[in-house]
Image: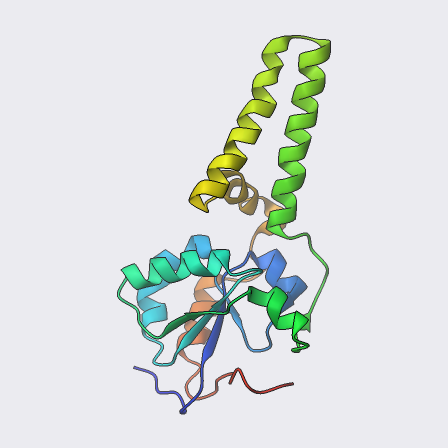
Length: 186
């Protein structure tokens, strides 16, 4: 097991690689929530508290449930996510601007609804099924806190990792005593 200095933590950002590239907490490691389960054993080798981060806290909560189920402890979710971190004036590492997954979902659902409605009005009422399905999917996403459309959009090349997730996990494991205290400002 790796040993960390007292009070040290590792920050695990579970957003898409595109979102991570846009802005992240300095020293954070990026493992998308969809990949956390397959690396649970390796992540479990880190002998330091893990703070899970996403944009608002929702995906970090899902990642925590996955890692809890795998038997990991010392897991924490950054309340309010990166949005709250930045609102508090904390430093972030910025990269190329990318569109968040949540915004991509809103655009796709809105486009499906608008196109379906126009087709239903102009060609056939059967096209009304498109906005009905998009709206139903949004209701299910809200009730279950999962999003099939977000999962599909996350697989697009635009949202794919620019690095090897396995290598990121190995770097997390090998971080030794070098850690990111949450109280430190950069």
